Amino acid sequence: MRQGHGFGTRSVHAGEALDPTTGAFGVPIYQNTTYGFRSYDQLVDWREGGVPHFSYLRDGNPTTRSLEVKLADLEGAEAAVAGASGMAVISATLLHLVPAGGELVASADIYSVTRDFIGEELAARGATVCFVDCADVAAVAAAITPQTRALYTEVFANPTLRVADLAALGALAREQGLPLVVDNTFLSPALLRPIEHGATVVVHSATKYLSGHGNVLAGVACGARGVIAKIARTLGHLGGALSPFAAWTILHGVKTLPLRMAQHCATALRLATLLVVHPAVAAVNYPGLPGDPGHATATALVGGRYGGMLSFTLRGGQEATRTALNALELCTLAVSLGECGSLIWPFEEPACAGTPAAPPLLRLSVGIEDADDLEAEFVRALGLLAAS
Ligand SMILES: *Cc1c(COP(=O)(O)O)cnc(C)c1O
Image 1 (cartoon, rainbow, N blue to C red):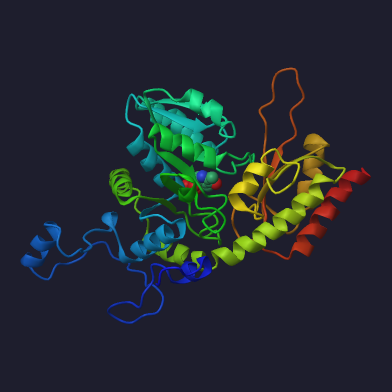
Image 2 (cartoon, rainbow, N blue to C red):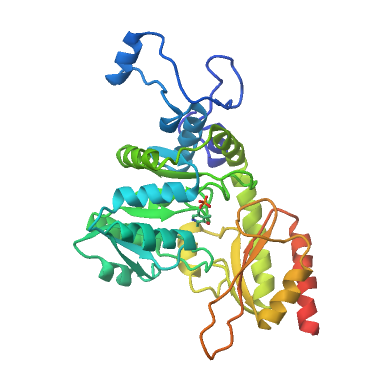
C-alpha cells in the first residue's frame, strides 16, 4: 500500500498482502488456536520483545490481524482491535476507560443494549453515568465533573437519527483532556472518520455495514496504539476474541463498503424525500432532509451523504402500522441493519397510563435493491392507508 491512495483502493488492499507461505491472493482463514516456535531461542526472543509471533488465538490471529490493519487504515487510526461483536468491543472499551468511582457522560440517544450495558454493568461496578443530549454541547460540558473519565456518543443515533455535534464534542474533549468514544456503526468510515473530528476511540458493530451481508457478528475499536493495546487486554479477559472465519467474512464485506454506502445513501435520500411529504406519514427522521433538526450539523460532518438509515411514524398509529408493514414485500420485518436487503423494525413507545399509545417508530435500513422498486413498494403500501 502506497500512501495517498483513495478510500476505495484502501478498502480493497489495506491490510492485505500475498500470503507469505503460499502466495495466496486474498487473506486465508487461519483456523487454528496455537502457534509453534521453532526453538527455545526464538521463544525467548519473542518474549523479550524481539520478532513478533502469534501465540494463542485469544491474543491474535493472522486473518483477524489483516482485518484490524485494514479498519485502522480506513478510520485513519494507528491501531485497531477486533472482537466477537459490537457489544464485546464497546463493553471492553468502557470497562477500560471508566474505572469504579469514575463517571461516564454518554449520549441519551444510543443503541439500547449499549445503554443497558452502561446503566447495569458499568454502574454495578461503581461507575456513575450521566445521560445527556449530545446535540447540545453546552449540556455535555455542564455534565462534566472532576470524576468524568470519558464521553460516549453515536453520531446519527440508533434509532432516532438525532445528530450529535461531533466537531464541538471533539473540541470539548480535547479542551477537558477526556477521551471521546464514538460509535460509528451507522455511517461507517466511508462517510465519516470521527478521529478527524477529535474522537479518541472509534467503535463499530462490524456486524452491520462493514460486513454488509448479515452473516456474522463482529466488532472493532480503532485508536492510538496505547489505548487499543489496553482495550485488547480487557477484551481478552472478557473472552471477546473474534473467530477467524468471522474476520475473513468481514474482510470481504469491507472491500465493497464504499460502493454499497453510495447506493444506501442515494436510495435512503429518495425514500426520505418521498415519505416526508406523504399524507400517511406523521414524521420522518433523516439528517439528509433540509427540515431535519440535525441537517446543518450533519452536512458539516458528512457533506451530501447521510447514510442508509432513517426512521418514521405513521399518522394512523398501530392500525396503520399493521396495514403498511403487512403490505411490504421487499423490506423484511427484522432487527439489525446495514445489509444488502432492506430491513424494517418497529420500536414501540411504552404507553403511559391514561394516554393512547404513541405510534411505533419504524426504523428502516435501506438496502441496495433498485431505488425504483423500493419507492414503488412504499407508494403501494402507504397508498393503502391514504385510501382507508
Ligand atoms: C448493533 C449495534 C451495536 C451492537 O453490535 P453487535 O455487533 O450487535 O453486538 C452497537 N451500536 C450500534 C449503533 C448498533 O447498531
